[in-house]
Length: 545
Image (tube, rainbow, N blue to C red; front, side):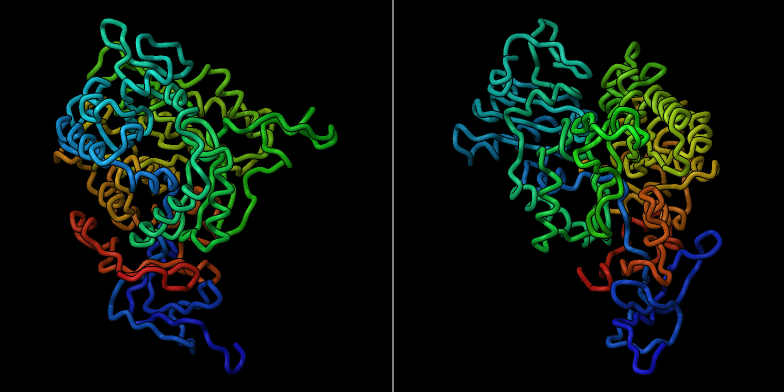
């Protein structure tokens, strides 16, 4: 280094988990930062500023590999339906409705029929909201309940209609109850979508500020632009507007909903046949952008929800004999979409929770690589929710990256346990067996399906206990260090960013979290109590407790 050189910041007096070296066991006591990157570790580097942490723990900034940022930001202003009983849910709806005009909507999110005892229904909502339009979103995101006024707007007041890949649920008399499952939720699109870009920018910023307080510095937004998951056809513009205005607090990788892909013509010499296959205009695909906002995989849905009993299983759910869930589309159509996106140069991230859906996705990836080999592409299976042992082995052989949510075990694990029974509980949202198969363990939350703080996720990956205290697949538990690596380097690997994120090492981005204790050594039950003291993004302190 030349005489007079100064790092921007020297952090010292710290317990630094660099996560470098064999087994990610590297540690240090100081780290120097320069121009948004790590300059040196455990070196006496002169710096313009010095921060003495008095023994606090420094780890790489957390990365959530699967969350719904705009959805979460919107939900922060909706009625909170994470309540213990159905009566409490109706009371929350009534309280919000009381302060609204007669033509206003009551919108709520987060209810779980496994916890409140049953799904709310149209009649109860009509009474609670005084006949107003009500739209309540299930915690899984895979279903919702609406009031009679909304059913009337949809032409469903007295009779259902067929919806491919979804269901308008009816009572014994054939009258719609208000419950819309899977793709049937898309019937609401003309009434509630799109959201204005300004509203989405507000939601993104609101979510991002909450993320920084939890030590999160980067996330993958798991579906924008289309389908029931998208909030606007121009949703990417909202993220760009947030960034341009300085209102994008964390680094974001966007998944594009496969619904918005279409045939793109190209020259025959480009090697894609008559065109690029499924794509976006201008030939846009995975990889566009920079280290603050980028375009990631295309998001494909194959099935639904485990606790909602709509994911596609090879055997019946334990608590509902005769029910195996269903695919969201024709099998050949799903396979064709995955193969076409692969041929067009996309990374593909396919939602698959039930083991029947996982079989389908693994078949599709194998076919895609056979017809158009792309070594090292790292296609993903989002959730990998109920995975048989043979599917773990096959995913490793195909180079597919599972992205499970260990956090589900703690918050919605009781519903999962009822749906699967004790014999299959160990297949749910695996940890240990993925590592044993040579697969990366990836940290993610699927927020707002559950509370998404990374330290809560690590706690559940290590302890594998439900809210009621029941063990669920304890053999899938991992160590505190392994859980920490999952939420840093493991999730960076899932995005193909393991060479620049997820370690405290020279050249890596200076995204750091300062903690009150070390997740790798703290008592397993104490993981949830570790506090985030500060968060740094690109070497700048962006949050202080």
